[in-house]
Image 1: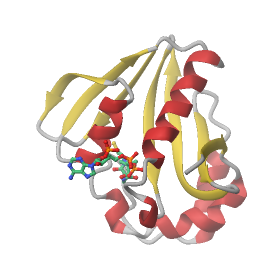
Image 2: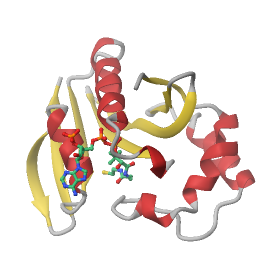
Image 3: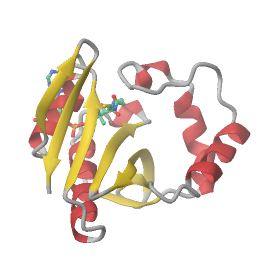
Amino acid sequence: MKVSIRPLKVSDALISYRWRNDASVWRYTGSKPTHSIDVNKEIRWIQDVLQRPNEKRFAICIDKGYYVGNVQLTNISNGDAEFHIFIGNINFHGRGIGTQATMLILAFAKDEMGLERVHLYVHPENLSAISVYEKCGFRPESASKNSVLYVKRL
Ligand SMILES: CC(C)(COP(=O)(O)OP(=O)(O)OC[C@H]1O[C@@H](n2cnc3c(N)ncnc32)[C@H](O)[C@@H]1OP(=O)(O)O)[C@@H](O)C(=O)NCCC(=O)NCCS
C-alpha cells in the first residue's frame, strides 16, 4: 500500500472528528477526548494547532490520497521533537501504514528540519505501537508504570 503524508488542513476535520468519538483509537494514548467531539469543535482545534510555531502536523494518506490518520511532531526545540501518531480509521490498523508514516515523518524531521533527535511516550501495553517504533529505530530510554520513553537519534 502506498502511504504518503501531507500537511494537515482545516477541512480534514470533516473526517477526523468521527475518529475522536471512537474510544478504541484512544485506548492507550496520553491525550484522549473526554467528551463527544462535533465537527465544529474539531475545526476550531485544527485552526488552533496549525498556528503553533513549534509543531508540524501531517495527514496520513493512502492510495489516491485517502485520509486515514494523523502524525505530528510537537514541542520542537533545540534539535528535538516529540512524536505522535494515530490511524483514526481502525479498518486500516495492522496494514503497515503506521510504520511507513513514521519513516516518512522521521525523514522529514532529519532532511527538511535538521532535527537530531525525536522522542515519544508510549503505554507499555500498546504492543502494535511499540512494534512500529522499534522497527523504525526508536530505542527505550526510561520507563514508568504507564509510559515508556523511546528515543531515536537521527
Ligand atoms: C499504533 C498505530 C499507529 C500502529 O499503526 P499500524 O498501521 O496499525 O501499524 P503497522 O501495521 O505498521 O505495524 C503494526 C505492527 O504491530 C504488530 N502487532 C499488532 N498487534 C500486536 C500485538 N498484540 N503484539 C505484538 N505486535 C503486534 C503487527 O504485527 C505489526 O508488526 P509487523 O509489521 O512486524 O507484523 C495504530 O495501531 C494506531 O493508530 N493506534 C491507535 C492510536 C495509538 O495508540 N497511537 C500511538 C500512541 S503512542
